[in-house]
Image (cartoon, rainbow, N blue to C red):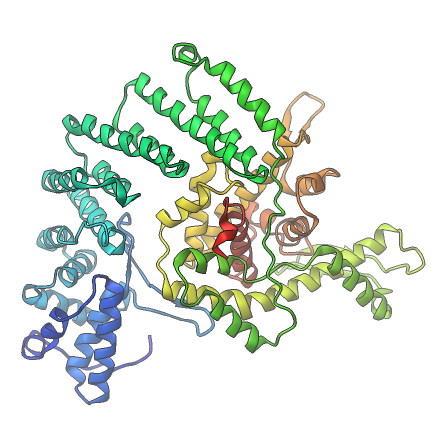
Length: 603
């Protein structure tokens, strides 16, 4: 972090008590940690500029403590920086930035703090950092996290994370959850249908809090009531979500099957309400839901489930199978880098979250592969002397990964000629991706993170409705995309590459294209992504442009070859933090968002 005050400046509890820092905190108008950080950091700068160094430092370190993002489920790293700036190789504060003296300062002023946000944050930091651990710190954190408002307007503004943290800390230290679960249950009972998803947020907290089983039936009744109301309003996604929640509160097989049937039929209703691009996806999910009902139970309900599966399967076959080329283009034209960067930032600025995210995902439109081929051919023939000789390409560890033969310009139908053109295309693509990621995607990404907090709940609502994601793979996509938003592209790359391979395989199977190989001894093995992308029928599934991108990024030795290098443990850390790893994550986000029904309306 930049030096904002003398590093050897000592601050004490007396400096805090005798200053007006407490008054400044108490007068903050705002409900979120981000607002606390914004106000306190501004006041800190003013104090430092006026030479009031001690109060300035006090306000700075409290602002830094408020700036961190809370991950309530992590025991070891519950606090993350809210911003990482790649272009300047800097980031916002993390717990390890605080010195021992500053941690001691937090402990000393804890009893003087009356603001529950500050007090819970200090106590949680102290529980994490102080050694030996003091059980009072966790008790203070749990008590003050419960002071966060559970009102509709506050639930996603730090409150849900705060209550989750209180529950997790209680579970880890074996403290009673009775008070927490009773407070949540009282809030659950007060929720009105007009509040939409709000009930589900409280339900998630109730589930974590291990509420007494005698309340299960009333919880199910209210969830089912809301589900049916959303169904009547044709809000199929929310209706399914509430029926799914009902399943959390019963072990009765007939009730579980009843909810499964409801969810399956909601998928059918949604399939009939959307265009054919996505209807096949919803029919497929309906069949998958019905198959969750065990065979011995399939004939005991009002409908014969086996017959119903056959009916839905016929409807699915009538629908157009999903293709991956539903990519909303955004042609930027020819602009210089400064204009491109400014344009990209402006595209996502001052927008609501949904619109900003959609615009970010479409900030760049991939160059058509046919255009790329023409440009490569023109370039190759223009600088033909260099292409008369072969070329050898090496990996960073010295391995020969690709060779290009010298070109015979008289035989443009030869494999060597096409290989050379392809090499040129990949190299051109590589340069363009490097440029567009640095000048456009990263600036827009940083602006998006500056203005919005992206949670797994946000990603769930997108991934669970995207027609490219099978329901049983939703969690993988959520985690992969989430870690990208956390600037952890090492994890995102490892999670998303297998999902792309699985997606290609599933779509090929839907088209009846064989994806496996049978050996002479009768063992059937699924083909890897490289083989799948080289299948002669792959263009029936993938648009040629996205096919080229997948090859250049994931499977070609001359390209980044991410899939094979990751699978064989050949990727170094820097490779998975590279521009191309960021671009691959962004491309996955684009695929997901542009296949959300009516997602184009956000544009």
